[in-house]
Length: 333
Image (cartoon, rainbow, N blue to C red; front, side):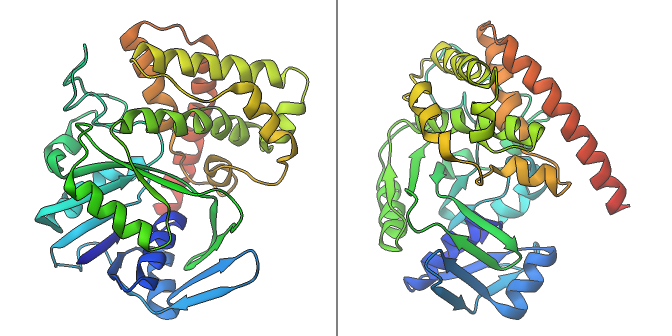
């Protein structure tokens, strides 16, 4: 089996590294500093008990790799998919599968499933329908992952051994297929607890609820969840944001299992861990706000669900992201 990891941030590097340790034929597609690090030094994986694994890897730049792959794990951020979509699809075998591991809602949310909005496009995620045009939806497997992994320097990921871990995968049409079972076995045997689901949208929403609240709040305040929850008025704001997010999910027929009281208890002692938007904001990188925030606002508008607090949050995080994007464009020029 030929496996490709398209996107070598923390999650992609971790999954690829675990597959390599299980003897799977893996190639990485990377660019910039990540490409240089992987090509020159290989991949280093560290656990919090100081154990390290260093692996030589096969790594290519986008456009250099020409083989057709049986499985491609796409671990790019959602806003990077449009530019890479054509290249990704060109590397997939005719009977291959794209395992799309992105945070937030997917561009295909209303596709291949019976609903009042069947076939509707989420403009915040695929405004010109280029993803729908270039990616064969019949080959897509939706996925969401729970695993705190950091990449402080290119080519080196650090894993919290004691944190819970779970990869959830599901077909766009909610069928439990043979290929889903094969991919579940592949990743599970590689040390990544993997669960196949007949409700990938529900799984996406349950993970999204955490990202919807903590990612923008931490990025805007530059504070960890524990600080925000302990600040006067913080608890009430968090509850209102969770309730609005759950209301949007409910309007689409999804029941979110998250309990906000339990979540507030969970973060009481979290003063050092920060989500991805925090790190992007601190490091001047554009944030993944469309899939995590704006798609939820768009769904609320579609179902006419009031979300006053989420609307305000979306405005503020959008302004910050605009600033980061302008700074990033200036650096590129």
